Length: 574
Image 1 (cartoon, rainbow, N blue to C red):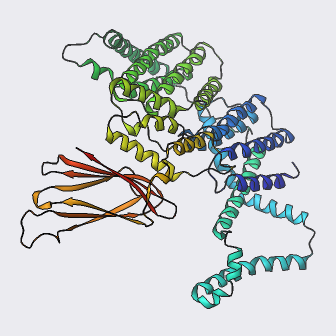
Image 2: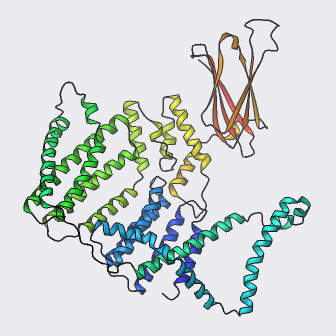
Image 3: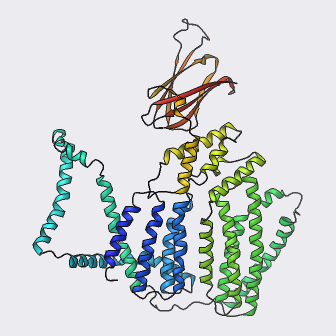
């Protein structure tokens, strides 16, 4: 492509406008689509498309990019890594068909690291390209160079002088007002990102053109000793047969010794079993690399079916564990991994039975499809709904399983908060929801995310009307309560949302006669606003034995954008 530098420059500028210094949202797919169009025409123009099926990787790339616009969950962090890997796989499969796992992994690493070697060439070619496009005389080029050097130095010196002398700084007050909305640091940051991305993207294109897919010297694969593999497969299969019989009898048929707790027994070991099933995959693939032998082939098939029972056992144990302790993303991930393993066993059977089969391609397709498919669901909503259902059935829930600082499940949690019977759990959930509100602002168009927007709308609907609160017209709120610390009684304070206000206290016994023992006084609490937000202040009167006595005082507090405190309080008899 003759104008490859120009097109990459346009993409880099587009990236700076859409992505840099922005939250990830609809801007991801807005950048992905022109990038994919550019890559397609680059590959086509340079006749690098040797396997059109490799272009199918465009589908998961587009789907995963769209999730930044639709969902707001932990997968947005994973996809920062997964999407570039899919780009690497697209290049590899379009230009060449990998046949070995190690070869594929090596090529993925090369796609990411090899472009660094092209930094010098990229800079040199870029300068030559732009020099050919600019019809400046030598004298004009000299003046442009001087200006580019002098202006940054002058700006830096003037900035230092303004800091050193206030009167001198006043001379530039008008200019400062004009440029007050322009951040010099942000401009420098964007320029640095643009330069790095421009050089790296061109390096990737040069690597794919010059090196990727080129035939290298074949490395002789060392065959596994057939006798060693026979013993290994036989020994493991015997162990797995015994283990699977134990699983069928004890786990599935509930037949265990009287001294063993079935519930505790069934809820353990799922991670270890999942690891064993992965090890079995490796052993089966290694067995295929040994010389063709019908015995090893039969043992490999047997191991596949024994592994299937192990996977079912792990799946069943995890389901029992979830029922007992609740649902989390990690536990849901175990299910997805186990289902993926079952799907991978299908091409593995054909791989063992056939002489020639590129099983790696099937593995890549299955893993990519499963991962993309799970991204189409709001996993946080699934986890929240299942934990809430479990709470309604067993009256047991862990709020930490629901609070992950993403927006997908926020509308569900807002409705669930009022259903919680336990005040401590309700306060914990309210604290999390308030934190989410404080840390997330309304998105601009480029950052727009459907789930995040719905979450903020749900929280806004539940916000209390500030007009119903008493306006203190101050950043401080003073609370006076009766107190008598000489009796061992004291006031205890707690907040539903920490960090919105702070509280100081002092005791006043000025009304007591001198030397009066046991005379009551006043406890004065001073609440000071720290940042805008909403919180609940609970003051509990605690006896010497730690039990709440007499009454507790509850203040609903809102700190507005001007740090003014608005309050509404009520006293509840104990």
